[in-house]
Image (cartoon, rainbow, N blue to C red):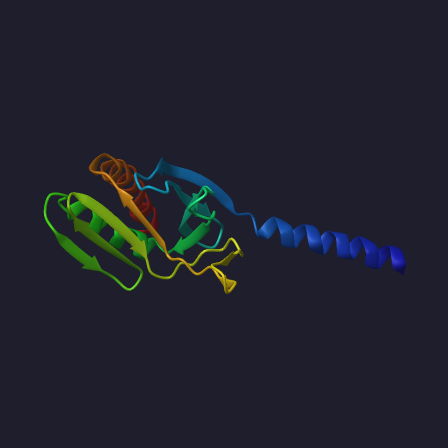
Length: 165
C-alpha cells in the first residue's frame, strides 16, 4: 500500500511540474542614462496557457542610493499599448501620456517612463524611520534606446498578433 501511494505521489508531482512549464526569453536590455543607472530587461514569458511580458529592472547600490529591484508583469494588450504610445512620441516636444499602467513624460529632450503598479521588491528599509522601500519603477531613456525598444517589440508583437488570429 505504501509503495503504491509513493509511486502515485511521484507520478502526480511530475505531471504537475510538467504542466507549469514557463519559458523566459530576454528581448531587449539596456542601461539608463540617469545619475543612478538602472539595468532594464524586457522579457517574454511563454507558457502553455498564455504569453505575457515582464520588465525587470535593477539599480546598483552606491553611497547615495540603495539597491532596488523591480518586476512588472504586463499583458499582451498593455505591452501593445505601451509600445504604440512610445513609437508615436517625439522626443523634441514636451508631451505627457498617461495610462492606468504607465506614464511617459517628455521634458528637455528626455523621456521619463514610469510604471504605475510597480514597487521595489528588494525588501530593504529606507531612511531613519525604517520604512519599507516603495519606490515605483521610473527611468529615463534616450531616443536611440527608444528606437531599439520599439523596433524589437513591434516586430514581436506583430508576430504574436498573427499567432492569436
